[in-house]
Length: 622
Image (cartoon, rainbow, N blue to C red; front, side, top):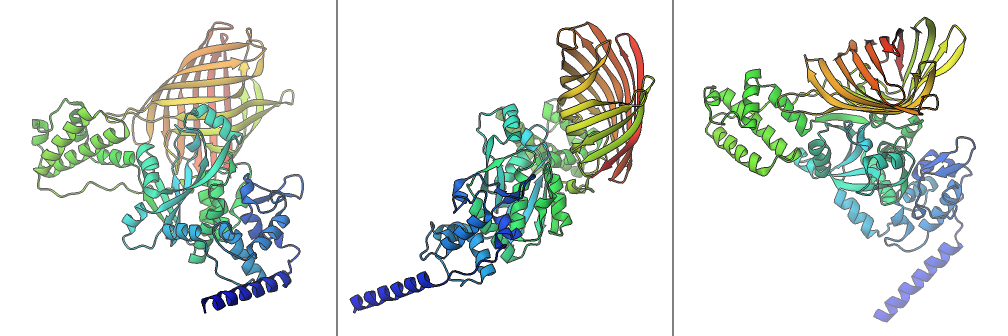
């Protein structure tokens, strides 16, 4: 009987195979390979100077056709043939490319026959995703890979106990696969020019919180997307297709944010988020595009450990802050008279805030255990003797989110005078933010600009000159206080007009500096920076010059007005020993987040000549 059944099964299989082999393949519409959804699934983009397509995937395993890299049609035909082959299993095309398979079956009305894909089914079942959340980690100037912020996707399971479940959720992220020993400078260079493969990876959310929230002190914004279950399933299926596939990483455009936009485009055809990308994809900009496309269902703010600790300390009265700082420094005992004389409620808040600060310093800043452990124990014992259950205040959500700040592309037009020469100046800055731009949605005291071009037309001789070309310029003015003592620093390189004593020439430069900043009020800080400058040019006497110096100034920022003023001094010591002293003042009046009126004034003593420069004009943000 068993033999008869096996013979019957064999005959049925043979009949099915013969019928499949003789069946006419489905007719392909002439332009199906140019359908936006297919181009998105294949990561195809049209050339800037021709009508051909090239996939951004750089891994042969991503293609089923030998010509799939440059031919969407060849890849579609090869995929259609492969998904109709009999059989199943992890190596079958339907299991390797489930998103392509589902889309082609829908477009061509192919039978929805089930297929056995153990690896994909187990993977998708483990992720157990009901909702997708776009997470934005705020900018982190100390790392080239995160200067503009970072985005990743969180895969939210069905919500029973929301907070517990979300911490255990998984995430999708795309990043450069860099070697651990690569320096930050090497990473920046190779990242800009595509020297790293980019890898899509899956990690638990609590690991991302640990990295961004706790170690790098970056606030997180969580944007839950309104994708339905079918769209979520498509996003996961396409993630499976690109997981562990190489897409060369480019810091400015094909970066973490760019790849996530491609996943969202695949999940909901027609969003065309990638069409917003021109020369660069800045994470905060991509969040704006997702928001403007109507994809955001809700937003949640998750402050970093540093933000939470700083807020709790700042809610203490100033005299209690002094006591807290003295306890952590060992100048005041935990049970000293300064602490015991406080009423129970105030003492409880003081001990709670101090304990949180000690724990933060131990975990994030590496305080030695022999200092942190005894102090933490004393704080807990003292706190346990107070019958007060008042919790520390929650960190308030910022009024303006990062995606609600000004757009990052800036175009400026102004007029001015250098000595007695009048000029008109046009400035183009692709990104990102400077100290005088509207501050809402950006980190206070932070500046990051790249590829900024300043050109001047002098009216006396109609001469057009490049005044300055900024490659990268970073400034971080972080106020110090009795609890935190960050270093304020700056670095930049590019080309700028410099006075040789007889002419103004465009010279390559490299500048840097470090120092401190101190808060004078809610929106004002003073800073002192020791600087160093290098200029290189054949018109300089020895071909180069070096200048140590200093920069002392004041910075005020609010949503209506920003002011930067101070004095700089440099001592050029190689080619021609001389001083260069400058008094400067710059102000911006903000008109919403789309425009700013600006004015600048400098008075400079260089080569024993005094000359003044003033400017006024308009910034427009796009």
